[in-house]
Amino acid sequence: MIIAIDGPAGAGKSTVAKILAKRLGFLYIDTGAMYRALTLKVLENNIPVNDELQINELAKKVKIDLRNNPDGSLTVLLDGQDVSLEIRKARITQFVSDIAKIKDVRQVLVKMQRELGKRGDCVLDGRDIGTVVFPDAARKFFIDATSNVRVQRRFKELKDLNQNIAVLDVEKDLSNRDKIDSTREISPLCKAKDAIYIDTTELSIEQVVDKLLRFIKNG
Ligand code: DC
Image 1 (tube, helix red, strand yellow):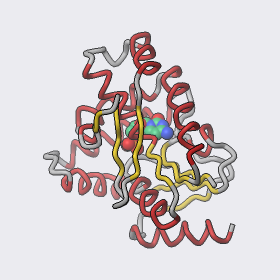
Image 2 (cartoon, helix red, strand yellow):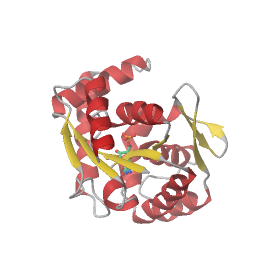
Image 3 (cartoon, rainbow, N blue to C red):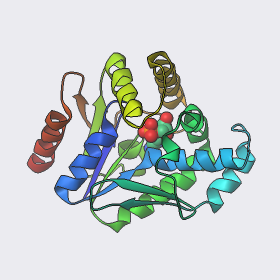
């Protein structure tokens, strides 16, 4: 069974998806982490983020893999190297949306995501899972929250990762990424027609997980 979770940055998708996958015994596939890993590779190779030709070449060569650990955490491997922490840094966040809007990049990563989806039952989170990657997913959710709450959540998440960043910068980053992610030409962020919309503004993580579990069990 494929469970698709889409929504804007900071809505709580990955936290919820990770817990949900663990509860159900499903694999967790964080597709944003894959775009982040490719962005890291682009920066490591000093390729300008608007050099689509070079980025496309790199995307075709790079190996990105995700490992679900027994404690529920996720390891992101880039050409065999653990980059799980590196890809959460501000320099990656700053450029990831520019890389993710490139058509050929999306084609390559969507293919990788479909391959990962063959490993078994899984929960995938991203921006285009229910619309493009797995349009036939058994369950689809669109998780949202007000931009204020999303900024606060992302700020706390970064603080927990010991990243020294001002709330104002988090706010700027989120609104910039929201804009790029939802207005890009290729598979922009949008709710699939048959996805269940969940506003998490007033809900705790546990409440969101419970809500999703109910929908999943009741069909
Ligand atoms: O969920 P995240 O913040 O880790 O995602 C990073 C970026 O990757 C996000 O700004 C948009 C892009 N992304 C995408 O375009 N499609 C996906 N399925 C997942 C992420």
